[in-house]
Image (cartoon, rainbow, N blue to C red):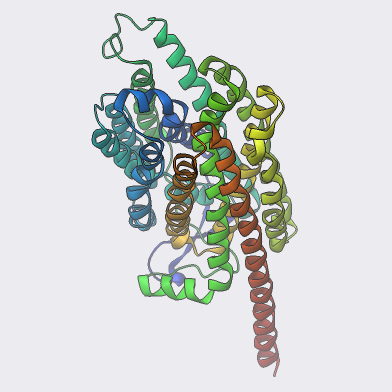
Length: 460
């Protein structure tokens, strides 16, 4: 399989090169998978230890929500686009390796925080490091595999992010339980650390290993997609492309963001909801919720990847939008877990959303990888990160905490707050995906008409 690859700023200078060998390409995917796992674990540790952190540092639910969303999101959002543009120009594997290094060291430092401000600063740097991952990883995968074989590796990469939610729950719960029994005695930095601090330090240390492994992967040449402009060499060109395709991209990005407002709201507060509403302890959460989440999170993106590749081979681009329109409704039952009849049923419902949100993410990234010019892939993913962070990661946890803390019902109403935030957000997301599909249909009709006119002129 061959494809055009970018050799200079002139589209005519693209040359034919072979894709990397399968083993080389999949090794890169495996390490990117590991990076995705570490990223979600490091950003999600706080969600599992909300009440211990609150008690230790004297914080309220709203302050915790700021650490979950705003602190992480400031740099993740504002630096995502510059780092996405950088990913379109420099070695992507080096960029990801440095990003993992930064967020891992920041996570370790969070384990030593003695105040809201110190933990806020730690979370800022976690967001900065993680902002480099998504744009560079998706761009790498798009250049490691031909268009009709990208769905599966993209789904594997995104499975890392999805599975990590469950791993974060199980690993953090295990570390907290182990530390509480004094089993880290004699280990430097862990001997006298509170259990939640041990979780930050250990999980951050794992990331340092992944950072080194990333330098063993390959940096493939950049490639184009058939039917998509091969180069948008200036910022003005890129802005013009976004404007021309705004009818597709604006509702697509916003739909993604509203769906992930629900995802972030649930991820941030569902473990706390289980503890407060069902009297479930950290050990039980690690034993049940973690494995349930992993199982659902593996199934979701694998199914999504197979469907995406099938539609790509059949040239059915609009079918992806049908998946996106349906998925938010399938995620709604998980947002009602507080009404479950038992703790296990509640945990199954909470975990089930991992499959649905993984399918949404896989489909969005595959759509952008196929739709965007090759030197806009990194920045296109960065834009999704910006919008998702401002609307989803920041507002989702904050709205839940605000409703819980100021609604008058007390901490045990957090499950009802999740439902009140997530259900409307998912409904809005489905509507926006429908608008994006309509824009795509109209764009395809316009392209067909333009090609027909060109052929007519050529024939005359």
